Image 1 (cartoon, helix red, strand yellow):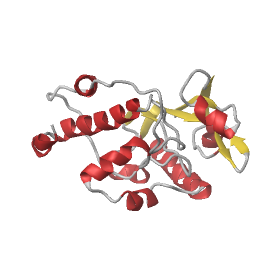
Image 2 (cartoon, one colour):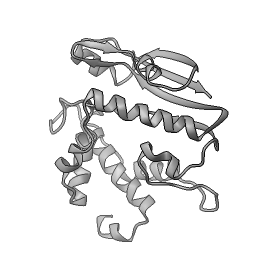
Image 3 (cartoon, helix red, strand yellow):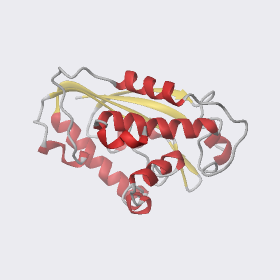
Image 4 (cartoon, one colour):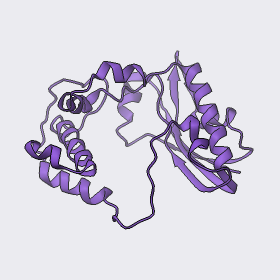
Length: 214
């Protein structure tokens, strides 16, 4: 399929590259932690590449005839592309800071294929805690501006361990949020792949869904 790569649409390219990363991870028994990158992990699994690709294409496909718009913009500048008081609902799972390297793991294969310099990309992604806090405070204020009265923002967040202390994700975001009305639903990570991180870091983190209403 690689010889046809340049003839693929952007959508099919994304599915194709995503399938490469997915099947590479699967060949290492779907282990995905910072300690497994580049390691040969047993047992192996047979991953049907074309079946996974077809699933990705079907899963994410949207009909061409729709009124959706995709914008490429910095979230801190939402007011440049979205009018105030115009959005009904906002859903997001905010990015990690100083934690997961999104350019590592099996996605590294993709950067090699595309010829991207991974280290340069990584340097723009990893933040320290204080910078992240200020940036996310700006983003939350922008979300408040574009949201309609009675509109809602839904964030999926989680606990984070910093300097030996576990920070509750929902509490962290609420302290920097301009929203007064909110509710929180919490669940544990037990039975999920995230328990690997808990074993490494000796924590029992939880995930929260925080819902703000304007």
